[in-house]
Image (cartoon, rainbow, N blue to C red):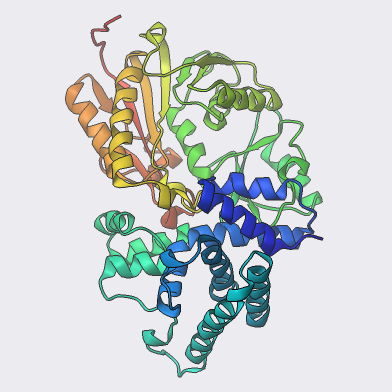
Length: 463
């Protein structure tokens, strides 16, 4: 059997040195690894956890080490992250095992001469943490090995491991207490949600099949096709009904978007940024697979995923269109409904994609908001008079959401926000302005923004 901590180190080195995405780096080391399920879970937890908690772990190195985190050799810094992560966030791993295995990891990866430094730093953390645990009830904050500043934004940023600019954004919208609840939620390991393909099977049949396979699933409020997997699953492709197209993986928030679009059988629908096809295939299911859905994306490799998903789910109504959705004049005035699930900063999915918090900057958001506005302008020209356009993102940043929509509506008086109907389950997520903002910590699902726009009368269309 291979050493799970060594595999975690290799994946983290790939992320730190080569800029690999967390899921890709992890898949690369696990693909050929010979591990039992417990060790595979440990590798996954160490990799995702170390990336997620990087700022907190660096702060501990800064406070406990003779050299700051950024002054450490990069590989040694990664090894220290693995050790400190286990000590601080993994209650099931004995402290002695966390320390000893990390020291061995240092020796095996070219740091034999610094093994004593690793041992000393980790044991110092453990001494301080033990002193905190042994203190009287309600111990002062100074007993925590991680010392925090008084300033609220920096305190939350270091404690929960987010950049200050993201914390500031959430505090402005939610206040300190709720912003902290959101941080805590986004640092949890993500759940897996399924969307049952009701054209092939009932939700009761999928529940029964999963129960027979020893997989615990629960219904999700307000979503008629959603099941949430509770606990471990093993390989997703081995679960009952995968090959038969009974279900696909899709977070509950993403499922809300297609229900907001509410397409009808026989409609012409355009999905402007379709890959990998979760919402495209959901639209097809809601239409009874009757009508035409154009799935657009810039890369053929990404659209291949759409085709693969459609084939597995046995859907026939989806057509592929490769290219930039800012440049499709052939679609002008042709669609009953358009979905623009716009490229975004993704900060509503930070629990699934932890490296986004370190990759995205305010400058990235500025660039994305321009792109989002351009895509919305073009997608709006595709809609027939009386038709619908849904704009959605998986971010909670107002610059990419509310401001994009407000700016569009100021320029186009013929478009109006259409709130969900009073009897719709979507009203649970609606705001007074008519759009929907799904805050993860309130609804236990990915953070999302979505709004349904209706073209009240025709606009002059330039061909």
